[in-house]
Length: 558
Ligand code: HEM
Ligand code: SF4
Image (cartoon, rainbow, N blue to C red; front, side, top):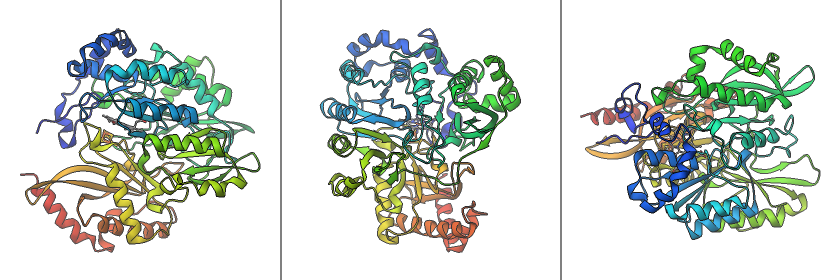
């Protein structure tokens, strides 16, 4: 089998480490071909459109991602566009337009992603100018959403509204987006060694995955002043969930933008640029150490920063689904679960209509691939609950859907080893049938390959897809992780089962894992499993089952 190579440095499956020689980095060459600024592919766009998708060079396929245009190998000739939504803020008019674009030019499939933005799918290259024209009129843009850029900046979906925040951090997110991307893109920030994920939040209930971000600003207090502590160097992906380290600085709100910008520039100027898999901010921090990073930051700022303040975050995890109180009396925010974030244009329009009719036209997207309608007068909530859309996008989903996240999978992603979204929904339904709709919600995260875009190591139950051979047949399978979490007590999920085929027994196996996990979690009172492999497998009689699968997996080596 030929390994599929991806410019982000990942190849499919086990061949990953062998496919690229150490030190090779074609993307730096691609960027150099446009003067180091990927946005300059825009100058070639008319000609690229004229030539057509079939004639795209490897460099063009990658460089188009600076414009937010993604060549999708599984759907030849049909592209995907990521639309930036800083802090997950969007409004009904924007949703209606995106729905219309999907219907007129796309394939009627839209995805709400864990970076709180929307992916428009299935359009041809010649549609790009028309799509941008529509988006621009609504203050939306797709620039710098892929490759070596600062990705959509995350924040609490209820920023400014929830009483559970130390302060509204969304103006910091907006200002950062304005500077780093703005309306035309900003070449100062388009030649990073790799992507950079940023979250800025004042939410006390850990609704964003701060510990997996390259840079995260989290609410803190020092000497009676409110501000942020700064975490750096978190990441997910093929190397596993690496938890961000405290930079040991306290940043006042007015200082936050300046501090983040300098950190981004430090990544730009100093992070490695050789082997793609080693170009994340984390690797610079490992080389330098935190004291040197802090010294470089303060030198660039030209002033000292206070040492970190008191972390104000609770140990709670809010998903902002269901009814949430707002600071304003007599209104509520209603969070709706969008199973695996997949939406069709009619549903998206309807979401916009509900936001207009019941709220103020605002919608907030969450890092759980869900949506919140804020500012609903309390007396109108029961009526909202009667709306047809809420049968599918429930404010009270089953515990197996509530925390369900799935990456794109084989439908559209060329790296995917298995189908994820449909399978994730099917498993959650089967679990509800088997285990009932009671019990505490679980986070169940699916990634279709080791790249880990579904954050599978940051969930109660994480599933990473791959292919294996059983009885001479290639089948879809998952590795099962448990006990992952973000927040002040972040921990990476541990792999407890190496090979679980996605066959008829799959729901039964997962039900056992979940039963065990729930029982363990109760004993541990929120702690991490002591020895998950032993407890999950042995106590439930899964050990024999596991060994038979291990045999199957090892058989696949021949
Ligand atoms: C290590 C290499 C990685 C590669 C090659 C990779 C590749 C991809 C691809 C091809 C897609 C688009 C699929 C589609 O929508 O058609 C995607 C989406 C996404 N990936 Fe990754 N990914 C990588 C790592 C990660 C990591 C570590 C994260 C963080 C958890 C992540 C988060 C996401 C998210 C959130 C999306 C949805 C789009 C968005 O809102 O940005 N990816 N990734
Ligand atoms: S984790 Fe999912 S979206 Fe990311 S590269 Fe793998 S299959 Fe594609």
